Amino acid sequence: IAWVMQRSMGTSGAETLSAAGNIFVGQTEAPLLIKPFVGRMTYSELNTVMVGGFATIAGGVMAAYVGMLSPYFPDIAGHLLTASVMNAPAGLVISKLLVPEVAEPVTKGSLKLEVPRQEANVIEAAAGGAALGLQLALNVGAMLLAFIALIALLNAGIGWVGGLMGRPDLSLQLLLGWVLSPLAWLMGVPWGDAGTVGSLIGVKTAVNEFVAYLQLAGLLQSGAPMSPRGAIIATYALLGFANFSSIAIQIGGIGGLAPERRGELSRLGLRAMIGGNLAALMSASLAGMLL
Image 1 (cartoon, rainbow, N blue to C red):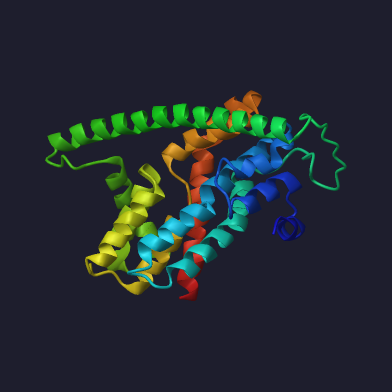
Image 2 (cartoon, helix red, strand yellow):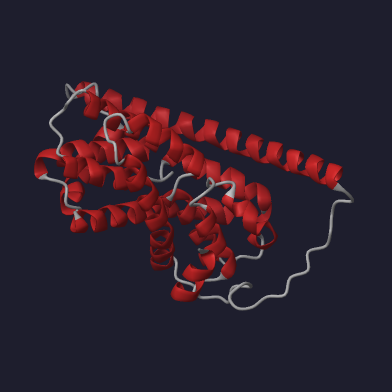
């Protein structure tokens, strides 16, 4: 998959392999495929790696969503798989529009790489892998805790302001839902469903896609007046780890592989998260055109 995308899109080998890996594994596991190159990547390549992580979901998570939605949406597995595959090249396109390549990537053409062997045997390799995994988990956990607290603080402030205006239920996800409703309509969602789909996209961005899919399953289970077209387009639009908490996850995960690039990862975080959302929305728009 990476070879096909690299040949057809002219991207570097490392960023394309990471984008292809995101179809199968998560946003912190895919960069492990290109660990020797993370520290030497260009600014644009780093952005591409982050956007690819935000635009897709891991295979194991996809299986959980299939189990969650299949009782009310029998064809959900095919749509989720299609969306994940579509989002990989879409993420590459969006990332290069956001941060065009101006340098020469190390893995742009052919590359002869000799990686020195660091472990003496399988036991040392297993121990080193476990230590690296623990380090990444601790980095991700610390960043995630800080970002969740920050979002909760922001929601508390918005809720307080909303209470003064008679809307104590006001929250970041609700505000995003109002803003995104016209965008949902432009993707092909019927206007009667646009508010619901926009709200789900807001939940995905402010909280995470798991809660958004859980709410979608609840709507389908309750028999809420939602058209099949709106439900299908929502399935494509909600796919991806593009939320505020995932910014922390990627800074902690990728930053653990290349600590010297953590400042650049922090600067790219919000932009890359928006890029991941745009990739999902672009795939949803294409699905809306074909339905």
